[in-house]
Length: 347
Image 1 (cartoon, rainbow, N blue to C red):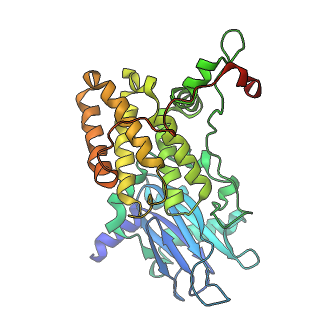
Image 2: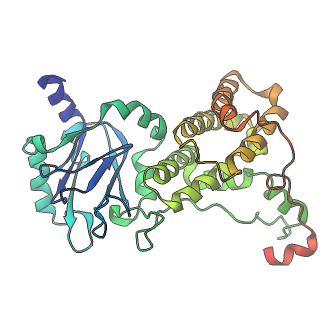
Image 3: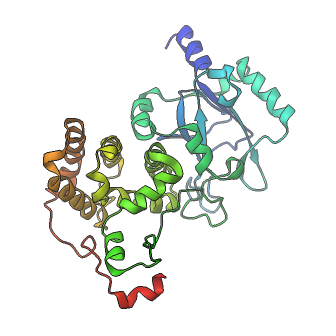
């Protein structure tokens, strides 16, 4: 990269200034990470979009890098360094061993101005351009407003499976029981349908955040568990996929076609990124995709060209991973028949 191109990318992208980060720690952006040296002060040339900053410290007991990984969500919008929102200032907190936003507005403004004048340029690592396209595919539906809605208060750190005191992510809550009918009842057939068809859960989430928000949350929950190691995000990803891929009524509605086209492409991209042995100890995904393929087969005559193409992109990834996904009844996917005598606990 020549100097002119480097300057253009620096001014057109975002930057993260990281102050006082310990030497020998691990710092990453999106799907890349490095061991930090004494000159490291952050990342520059970050393209527009949603990005994950990850970091962890050297374990003082055995000298190995690892243990708790902390994650910070960052949004970069068009406008480059001219937009103050695209310059994030973080500082190492010795007491909490975490990166915190610089709290003093005047201090933050001074550092931000320094970044814009390229005073820290030699200490900022360039964003790895070779991962930009892949990351865009995984997070392209996530907007700044989605990040603001989901991330912890004040940009707090995302919880990992080993952190009990980290801030909670504000994911959209899905209903655990169906809405009562006109008589205020939840009869057995309504409960049975609720447990076999995710349409009501999907529609409830749509009312809260819209279909664009739903797609964004599917993508964001995935990268937060894949890269950020958040168990909370993993559980949300599974819940959203169950609601969407069992939503037989919604799949048959033309109004939902665009959503399912984008969802199929998103899930296909996600399946390409999970480790080969990720699903070795679980049947959740193959059973869910088998059920979804059965739904698509039942509605085959009504499927449009774009949706058929999106489905094929999903099957082209899923079948080599899980087999032909031939529809067959399974105890974890089959309808849950609820007897009226069991309804007391749901009222």
